[in-house]
Amino acid sequence: MKKLLPLIVFALALGSCHKDDEDTPEDPVAERTVLVYIAGENNLCSFSKSDLKEMMAGSKSLTSQQKLIAYVDQADTIPPFFARIKDGHFVDSVSVEESITANPAVLEKALNYMRTNYPAKSYGLVLWGHASGWLIHKDSIQYATSRAYGGDTGTNSSSGSGRYWMNIPPMARAIAKGMGGTPLTFIFGDCCSFGCVEIAYELRQVADYVIGSPAEIPDEGAPYDLIVPDMFSTSAEFYKAIIDHYYNYYLEIIKKQGHKFYNRNYGDLEGYSVPLVTVKSSEMNTLATATAELLGKIGERLTPEGDFDLTNKVFYAQYGSNLFSYDMYHILKGNTPAADFNNWTTAFWKAVPYHLNSQHWLTGYKGPGELATYMDSFDGLEADSGVLSMFVPNNVYKNTYPYWNTAIQQFQWNNVIQWQQYGW
Image (cartoon, rainbow, N blue to C red; front, side, top):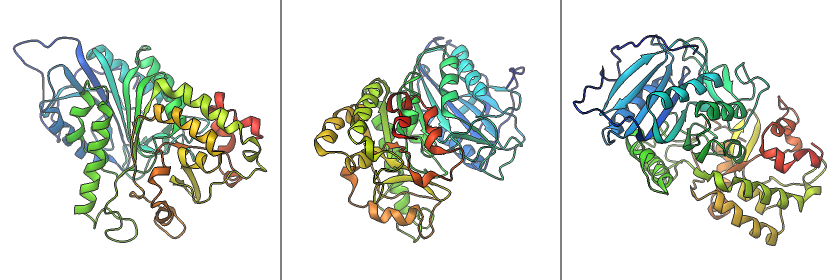
């Protein structure tokens, strides 16, 4: 997106589009404005349309001082556009030039557009699309074998998950610039593998809270008709309602549609949902320091020749043949002295004020020796799981590209943890 085009009011299949014509002008400064950034130029396109319908339904519960804005890039003939979603409709739609949603510059301009046109006392951001946790490539918007957020085909096509991806460090910088240095109240990653400590630490200065799942999420994503009002709550614990509605929705829908939501056999996900976590940014520096101190107690185990044990530990993601996104709480509990670990948990639970655990969830890795098989060994480990993932370098990642064991050092988290001191 290089510049905004002139205002275009056009009919959209998802709902009517009209100018706001209230007799009484709204207060120009809202209580909260939330931007939903939709990277839908990929095989999630149809789900972006259904989620926009849900947002329209949820918008009917908002007041005039609660402004829901969408930046939408879909794999069809409609160019990207901004719109406010109000009273069940699109209003004030503005078409923009075709662009790569995975470009940090586009995210920056989208946030600046939100602040300029819908100023508020507080702001929220929803990142909608594909994601693979912290995984990073040397160029944030070229084709990447390792990837983080976005998934833009660049061809208005829905034939795949996308060629272009945004790394998390430039995402953080784009948010800071787009917000003019004002932290968001929250960033909600409605995408896979967003609930990891490396992402939360990278975003700690641009958002008060980071909300997401360390695991894969269903293509349908969040139930926006339920959570849109939650995103505007002024409660100090607003994140609980977002997570509760999300979690309970899939708990029920999996029960009702076991033929659709299953891994290996119909009904094998009944009683399960999507693991979800909230991270409090103001506690992240303390958690990083505490984690570095705890790891320092077992430094010899963390070297390439060491015996840091990932066997039978809860993990949330698989990338190719590589298992990763291990539960931070579980792997540290299993590898550190009990007294030291128990001291560390004080910092962890301050940084993780809320989570809901699920030992099984919908995954694309369903074959023998893949994630769905490993899930059977996660049962009964709820008390040992913090639902926040962390990467630990290991020899099993020797064939990754870019080489994960050193690529992780591009994150600010490494400024404190210093994986290189252990020989990586």
